[in-house]
Length: 280
Length: 337
Picture 1 (cartoon, rainbow over the protein chains, first blue to last red):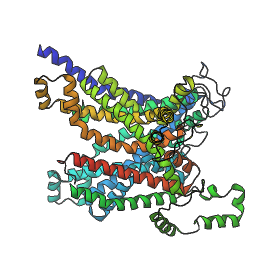
Picture 2 (cartoon, rainbow over the protein chains, first blue to last red; picture 1 turned 90 degrees about the vertical axis):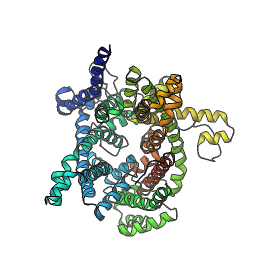
Picture 3 (cartoon, rainbow over the protein chains, first blue to last red; picture 1 turned 45 degrees about the vertical axis):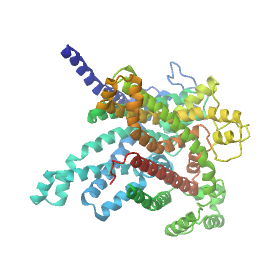
Picture 4 (cartoon, each protein chain N blue to C red; picture 1 turned 60 degrees about the vertical axis):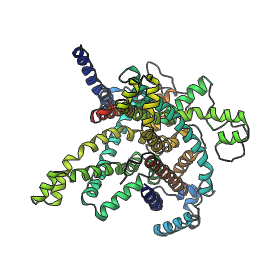
């Protein structure tokens, strides 16, 4: 009796361990595909006037046309070509800066280490959106500048994470052994400590991709990111807001942001279950 | 514990100075020329006008000079004059802060009630359809762009069905109650104006839900995880063995023991709410700090941008401090290093 009850239950658990991950992966792969293949998946040029203005969705224009007669479906798919690379780029640069500074701060400590952590504290004291807006505004419009602003807002997260990790690994015995056998400080850090520190940072980075996409779209929405006619989701929703009664203009880009962020959040949730079995 | 609180309080002025310095520096390394916000296009070629404008707004001085002057003025409560409204930034921000606070508080209430109930349900019906639905609801909340959700809900509830009012804090024709707290709900209650109170509440529903949903997601996940842990403990078994009903076990025994971490996550959600408020206010024409920040950023109104960023940082700092202190008081066992 007991055996027959436990066996199926185990199977179900395993499914739930991976189901969120699987859903997330499918969504993200779809958008990755759109990023690479948008020109071949769509019929219309995203920047050209291809039909009457503000047409409701139809067989010819699946998601309708916007105020300039451009195809919303085509623009939505092409939007991935801006949002995804920028999110990956921002997170990669933020991890590079944050992880190096965090590792230096955790391993060497001292005045420089303390100074780095105070800078981290102060930067994290701002509501992220407000700080990103302030920096993006002073750098001027454009997706590149918005990306710089997002890196400035985001790197401290990884610095704090990496520092905590380095502080913990530093105390382990194999490090002591390496020091005792005469390894230099840089060698101890790069060969004996850092390889054991990456996992939490990489998981956090994956989970953050969705949030970075949201932040980038938010900046574009208020006019601080992409400039027209770039088919960027945030600025497309802003177009939709000014054509309030033509609901379809904002529908495509809104669903795009929703699904891709949802995809990354599903992955994050799955990873969270995996690494924190308490919440399963 | 007292030492911890004192140390945190002692660090506050330094953090505030850090916030001021960083906000000032980051907005000064600028490519967008603030002059374009002050001088009209036609006058840009007129060197006299440009020089006069620079002198008037202190743009002819060096960065360190400007920084010292700014901090000196700030100590006297002066954040400079807005390029756009031509009023003191401090006055503008103080005038708009209550609207944001009212929205954020409402969103916090909506988010906490939804989040806690969902978390409890998910834990009580662990690994059933209810649990999975709660998870999906939570994930949607942290994935939907608030500015899009706001538009969609306005379109459906206000335009299509007409059951909820459009943007704004109250009906634009309504006379506002005398400002006591700046919260229209509380002020109209003080003035005894019940119709206005109801109108203000109806205007709050959509933006508070939009803003509260994401927070509800985070809270529900945390409540669920903590509930599951507590439900596995022995005192729950004891309560059940003594014949306590399931509802009583969950609410009186388990939920009570998850309140400390829950209150903490509600406190920290403030940062998210402030961030989300910027966009929600823009969609709902809410005359708060967020829409002020957006107008300032769009118009390259640098005194206003710096001012609103500093105020946002300080508000955030204070709420985080309060949350940390409340956590330590509620939980004397934790030693915070």
